[in-house]
Length: 201
Image (cartoon, rainbow, N blue to C red; front, side):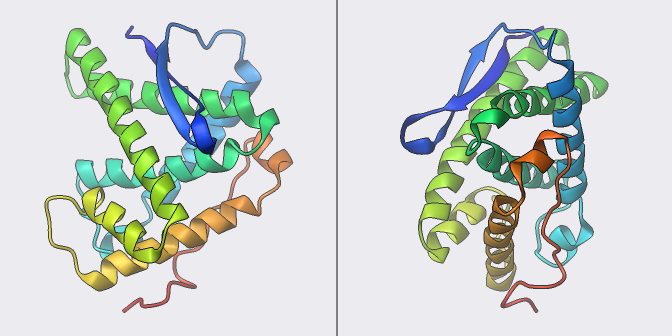
């Protein structure tokens, strides 16, 4: 099994990924709650409107990009709560355990899996940094980050990018309003897609 990536708070409130050999054993309550949060994140990332109405490619790469985006928003919410630290770490571990399992199901060898998981974890850190900076900036900065990741290798419609950017900000605000006590028992709700985004066609 490759070293597990670990997510910790970094300078200026950012999230930093490091690698450690720490096991998940002995953290069953956190694992169960984090698994529930991650499962909900997967469902949120697979909502059809993201692909049909916002123009994100419905491909393995596109689905990974949206999962990474939604996971970032969840981790961003959890990192604001000291008591959510264990659940946040377990959530991150589960996400990359899931990626590891998916790669193995696709027939990727053990050695290659370790390298690919580490590379994906590092690329996820790059996205965390980009999205943190983008959310702190204006809409143009957020749209630029989205063009670089979910819409990479394509020329998306401006309306699609604008709508996804609007939804990301709405999702971020929606998650911020949810009580930490709710999150700590594994319950989370994501913002509806079909009610708000200005500029939607």
